[in-house]
Length: 125
Image (cartoon, rainbow, N blue to C red):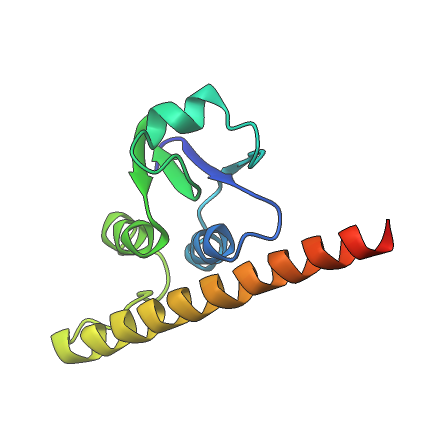
């Protein structure tokens, strides 16, 4: 199995997706909490292009982007429980489409939530 680590942020929907997949597959992992405003050197080294979470590190090799990480988990631990994504190409494409749709909507709503929270906190001061 090897060493598995997940770099994420508290309540981050994309790293929660990765953590859920690992739990469903029965994979033990170490969770590393990142600070959005002060990213660790390790995170920047593992994801130098986007410098974002989630990052899955398996045996010292980083994998970035939650959907890509899910596919990696499915390919690497095939024999562990049921597959995360369907095997049939058409069904797999539908799953990818729905995941992308959710990604876009979650990002929009989460961004709106952060702006609203920031606005509200400034109004109360």
